[in-house]
Amino acid sequence: MEKLDNVIEMTHPLIQHKISLLRDKNTGTNEFRAIVEEIAMLMGYEALSDLPLEDTEVETPIEKCMTPVIAGRKFAVVPILRAGLGMVSGILALVPAAKVGHIGLYRDEETHEPHEYYCKLPNPIDERLIVVTDPMLATGGSAVAAVNFIKEHGGKKIKFMSIIAAPEGIRRLHEAHPDVQLYVGHIDRELNADAYICPGLGDAGDRIFGTK
Ligand code: PRP
Ligand code: URA
Image (cartoon, rainbow, N blue to C red):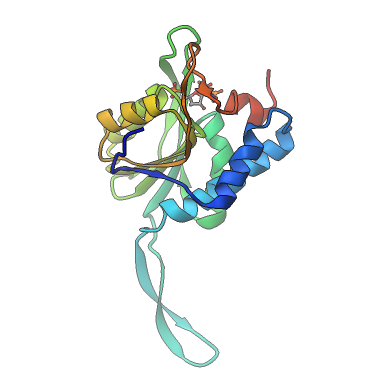
């Protein structure tokens, strides 16, 4: 697809290898869940490269010094339920003190439009970097709705992290929210008639939670 300046596609071989494992329909729930977590951690390393720091005093065995630590109250992760939950532990492994919000959305099977059933965000949210997680960006309807909620609650600096994205979803998110930086593990070919990503990995929520 065309290059968009707010879209960063991961090229790291570890991420590409792990995505191939996720795609395999023979990968079972345990392994699938663990790999989603690992990919989220690797992608988080990239997406959090501009986390704000502040200096703090530490006494080394040699002497006192001022040294940088991640600034407090500056970051939150917001998974889109259900599947985005699978990525949270990978991000928390990097920033254990992060606040966690939740946005519950499900896609209507016929219209493919998102429906909200839950929203709870950290308060205040306006000064935080917010990373929204969802392994799948398909039509982009859920992503746009989630970012709308966060902005309505005052969120300003928002990044979106998805493991697999369709060009259709990337364009829709970009058009609605060009200010949102999007980190994508892999950009796949297209959506099928049921709005599933091809080749994709199937239904991410069902594969993470072992449902269906
Ligand atoms: C999946 C996925 C995304 C959404 C992507 O969730 O986790 O949230 O679909 O599709 P979109 O880009 O077309 O909106 P789903 O609605 O299947 O809910 P679930 O995670 O609870 O299974
Ligand atoms: N949601 C999924 O879980 N998979 C897709 O391919 C599309 C939406």
